[in-house]
Image 1 (cartoon, each protein chain N blue to C red):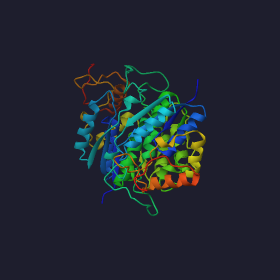
Image 2 (image 1 turned 90 degrees about the horizontal axis):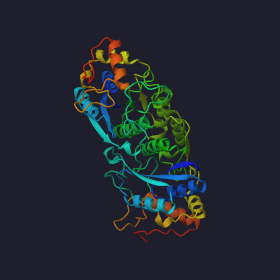
Image 3 (image 1 turned 90 degrees about the vertical axis):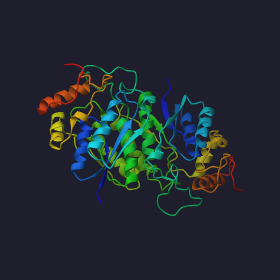
Image 4 (image 1 turned 60 degrees about the horizontal axis):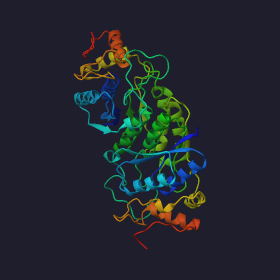
Length: 221
Length: 221
């Protein structure tokens, strides 16, 4: 029987690459996407396309309304900034989001008997998010070991120390179709990416540095 | 300004006692109850009564459907046992429940600026649940410190080493009205407790040992 893994899949570049990595390691993949009241609903459709293209064993979309908690530009009424912010934590930070997502992934992993949970956390490009640091991932792994019956779960963050260009290059080598992916925090109603938010900028630079043409459509030229 | 605390409130004996303890320590209390698809919906109404009686600053009921994850008698089709189970983890264990609940409490605490989260975890009577152990609570506190911007959150589990009798005695001294509380895993449609499930048994024995009359109604005599 193949080993099972739960993969957190947002539909962006990072998690889509992680999904391909998990598949390349021979895991039977259970993809988990959150409909959490995010501004960018299009990414859920992207996640569905990516999951289907990767022939995952199961793709589950879990509803959890984090808007009621508030505190973020991604779920609330705060505007998504159209340029790089200064130092510190970006307003797009969603309080405890990775803790919540990993906790639900952990519950599902326990029910499935999966011992591996994959997440696209990355410390290089997102150093402003505290819940993307390696020591955070280690702490969650320790918690998972103590808080479950099965007792041993690995939290896999294979992109942790990669630049966006390295992630894109890795994904290309695994045949990831990035035309399906969505990165924009605040896409236009026709689905095109704004090209100006922090996430778009990171993506654009990553593709440029990787020497790969970014297949998504942008509102700006 | 009073210090704020988020208190996980299920509407049972333990969490209602914890709510009173947080209040007695001078905290401005933000109570958090989960509608997670539990078999016992009555406990949500109990939580509302308890929160109101304690004049909490805010009581929030957060919807998260854990039935879709499965794996427990409390949310699924597995029957709740009417007697004490053997060794090991009870079928009423909900995978990663405390991790999920604490994660959401953490998000709310971060938005509120609360540095304390109270939980009724208890290692004495529920030794079968891995996510009620002191080392688990410590691990979550460490995780919370790493995964949030504020960086320092205390996870308070004041009942950890108390017997049910000690909890009841403590609650009585703080004026907790246990007639509002609900403990039964599987109450009858008229709201009366079954008196036979593990949770009822623990409660009944706790009140007996504390020398206090249990004010709730049981289906059995």
